[in-house]
Amino acid sequence: MMRLLKRVKMWLHDVFCVGCKKKIAASYPAFDSCFYRSQLPKYSLGHIVPVTHYQMFGRYRGYLATNIIDIKYCASKYGVPECDVVNEYIFRGRFEGWDTMSPNVLSLDENTQEYLNSPRKGESQYAVALHLYHYDLWEEFEKNILEVDDLVDLYVNLIDHGGEEADLIAKKIRSSFPNAVILKFPNHGRDILPFMQLVRSGALSSYKAIIKLHTKKSRGAERWRERLVNSIMYDREHVLSLFQIMENEDVGLIGSEKDIHGGYNLWKYNIEGVKKMVAQLGLSYAGLDSYPDFLAGSIFIIKGSVLDASKNLEFESCDWPPEAGQQDGTVGHQVERLFSILCYEKGLAVRGVSPPSDQ
Image 1 (cartoon, rainbow, N blue to C red):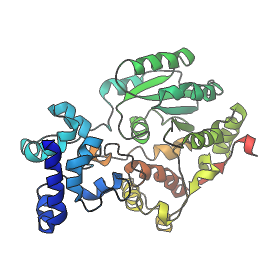
Image 2 (cartoon, rainbow, N blue to C red):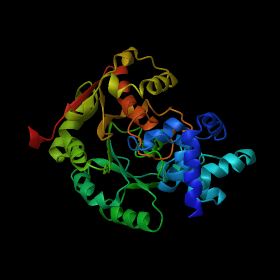
Image 3 (cartoon, helix red, strand yellow):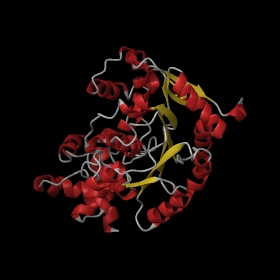
């Protein structure tokens, strides 16, 4: 009861004492009001100052106060409850030199790199890179990959959810694909960061084309996932026809024709980030300001030379903020657009296709 009264008192103080708002904001230098607001349902703040809303409600409901502090990492490393991480950092951690983000996860450790460099089948000209976050979808993807097993090398990025689940699903994968390369990653950067780690390792550099898949399963995404996957992996004959297109035509990226988009609204939060990436790679694609078409959904077939052009991208850990349901404007969204830009820069097309069943 006393705790509730204290929270109500804080709310009344902030609503009616306008002069104290700047003082509150100044006392929370790690709090990002815009980032916090972006996570909340519309109108949920009312007249409450964002930082007070976080103190009273947000931290108990799992909302993040900032995208420069990895809440789960700090809670684990410094032994504080997740809901108290920001407060502890503000009043103690920043003076003690806390690490606010997990160690740089962009470079693979030596053992993993050695594993990737070790001899495998090595005869395939094509690869499949599957990001398996939702283990329960493995059988769905297994059927697709079995259609072309003799044509591809399989790489599976497993997200380690803790416990024995990852080891069990790895055994299941190996029962069907004994030569599969299976890697474990922390749940960070969605499907894009682990994929880029694989790219940066050089493991995919020798392939003519790579099929990128992931277990998209957010609310309402099931039909979208089916469309994206069926567009490029409907059956063996369809996959072979797309490989032929990659090999014989000036095409760098193939995916669902219904998921090629462009225009200002889909670029406005990403244009500057993509420009920085293009500059970092030493390129100068002039068409960016026209907000060109790009392939959305991150399920596609990409020419090996196009993918390899992104290998020298460099990121810092803070470029990949903790998961907060972001819909746009993250590094992942920008990398998704970059793949199309790399095609255009090389004079290659982005080709939209549909499953044979829709034709």
